[in-house]
Length: 255
Image 1 (cartoon, rainbow, N blue to C red):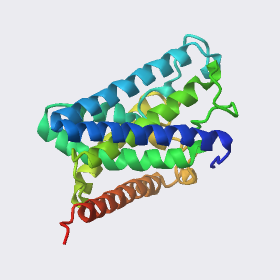
Image 2: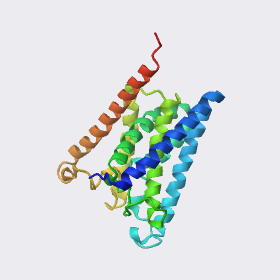
Image 3: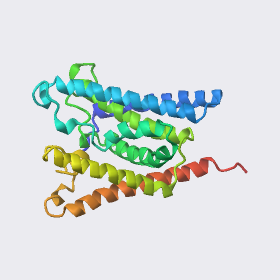
Image 4: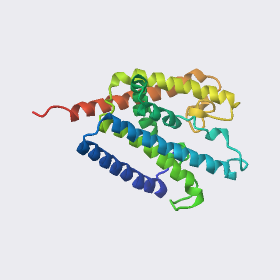
């Protein structure tokens, strides 16, 4: 597991500066123009449209690629029901005007997507987002790697924008909300795995493909689920706690 070759590092080299530049431009524009929450919602809505466009591109590519089964067939495993795919649904919610629902989903949209995305960008082999080519040449076979890096880059951009703009103030006590949404997505993923008769592995909850704890599935599935939940909830709590500490330090009144 892991791939720290040239394609991985070059991918981060074009992705991370792009995110940083976009954040600086939007945050400076927000401050100079005195924009508020309505602007933040538009930014996140724009990010939502961006990842949905990439999802459509991915779908078209898979429909026309023999590498994922027969041409004209969409393999069930690639459906947008993985943990990272939840941003497709969470971001439009927090960009919407239903305030109570948005506030409830914000901790998940911040902590869980930030945590999972950071793991995948650091260890891209875990999800196979680098593709088979050794470089970033603009060719047909690199469509999905570009899609994956752009998609996951957006999942890094949105949580950072949420905090830096003040759209969301991270609090450790919000872990309860994040956990409720996470458990709901896990139940949904398990249901979809069963509906597709075991040929999918959404959130690695069916076969544990690529998961080092998958040996527990056959005899101790409850333990397997608890380990994944513990890692997800614990990591999200750590993310919220660190973000809250940074927020407090950065907003501490000057002496």
